[in-house]
Length: 179
Image: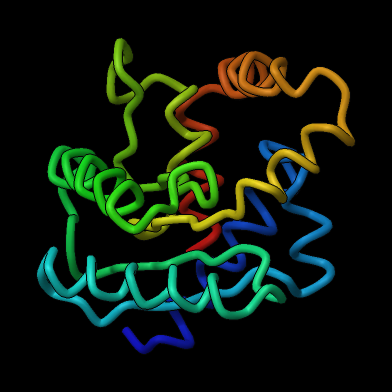
């Protein structure tokens, strides 16, 4: 699949799933203002993906106009267990580079599963995406958005209620419609 098609699918997922369901109340404004950067990694190994992540973090450091980046990696970490373990390496990289508290990485995967849930549980769909994605965010932007919205701590609870009400079958269908 070509990179422009991968970006189209991820953008559609962001519009039709994340924004329309309001899973992240901060996403709509950034998408409308064209401040979401979509990057497709050609990595086929974890080492290559880590190098791509380091590069995108350095671009974040250099270019304050980049608000958020979705680093899409369709060829590596297809297994959620492998992806989840890779997140520990990502955290270590942030620490090594002195980026803890400066940037954060949100995680999305087609097979995403929160701890203490079953694979088919509806709440897992809040972090399911068409491809594995590392979402780079500026910590200062996250803090600014939290200050603008009341009760952001209630967002996960609201999402769980909504997703459970919709049910896994409907969510799976909706996620597939973004393809």
